[in-house]
Amino acid sequence: MIQTRRRADAFRTLALMLLLSSVPLPAAAERIALVGGTLIDGFGSTPLADSVVLVDGERIAAVGTQATLPVPAGYRVVSTEGMSVLPGLWDMHVHLMINGHADYGYWDRTYPPRLRGEIMPASALQLLKAGVTSARDLGGPLEESIAVRDAIRAGELPGPTLYVSGPFLQKAPYPGTEQFRWGVDGAADARAKVRRLAKAGVDVIKLIDQDQMQWDELAALVDEAHRHELPVIAHAHRPEEIRLALKAGVDGLEHTGLSTAPEYPPDVIAAIRERTADMSKGPLFWTPTIEGLFNYEYVRDHPEMLDNDSWHEGLQPDTIADIRQSFAHPERLGYFGITPLRRPTLKTKFAQLRGSGVVLLIGTDSGIPMKFHSQSTWNELDVWVRELGVSPMDTIRAATWWPAVAMGVEDAYGTVSPGKYADIVAVKGDVLRYVNLLQDVDLVVKHGRVVVGGD
Ligand SMILES: [Zn+2]
Image 1: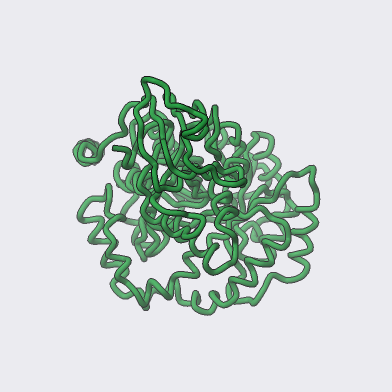
Image 2: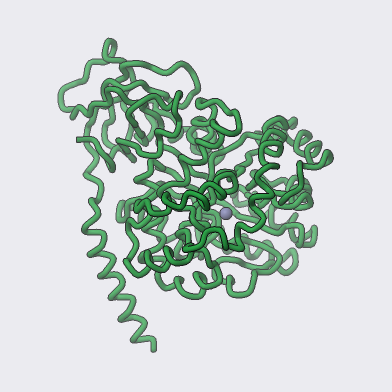
């Protein structure tokens, strides 16, 4: 049995290598000059027309204009004429272990052996090609999450710089999900689980159903995470989850929750305001992951977009066929049953959060049914601008500068400025007028390597 499994693993590795050999691995870092486009540098100020960005190896060497910064000898010029140039996007809530399949129970029974070799690398590749150069993965099996993150870091797999949580921590895992959901039984166990995750090298702790925990379990969990300098990110689907998360001192909250209720109750908003008013604690981050809820009915009624084959990239033909058949009838999916009743409440809830002083971040839940890594992130930006009244500049900042701050890496990421990693995207046209141009980026540079376009 073990022998057979090993042989199957070896075969999968070989199949993956063959698969990846057809995917161009990024060229070696070089000296490149991005010349001519309008630069939105991520700091929020007036864009810089006729910009020049010099990239030396992995880092940005200089930023100026064609009038002020001549391109030195030895730089390969990549024209960005007619384009918007901006920092590589972040997606603060992705699930690499899922690819849009509509039946979680079936997926969790069937695909674990393929996660490391096929599913998670495909998700990462699709994100990168969509212009997402950094992503936070909130919930996955521990070994696989760390392995994929580290393989990307080592340049062995194409993908965004990943920040991973590994398994969700919760009171009790749902049956059949134990490999990526860990239960917590008592305060000592909560500390032990966090220590195990910290030792394995996760970047963040993901908390869910914290309203089902004992208070001493929750308090111990957050305290232990902070002792290891790990931020704690919690689900915010129920009022009591939010109250307890704030009381325990979590660093960020996820989703636009409360089901079909018309708004967040006054005491919850008061608690959020009390927290955001406390300057010594820094910002309270909130990732509303709202586009999937907003767009479900559109996708149901316009399923052509499900035929966009960008989500096939990196997946085996049988996986693609399996995912495709799972949403043959988008209107029948139980997962989205109540979504049409939630949608009319979203604008009010989003405005309440925004008005209570949280720092909102772009994140998508990509990987959930019919939500593909190749197409989710730009849709979140689009909904913020088109439906929710956020300015394109603020929306872009929520996908660049603020995520870098939230992960404590703003010295190295989040803006196009000298000294930072050269994570840059460019797209023809003006994204400050039409943010949905980001659905098809023309140039993606990650750590100084051109991964899309650039010739
Ligand atoms: Zn999620």
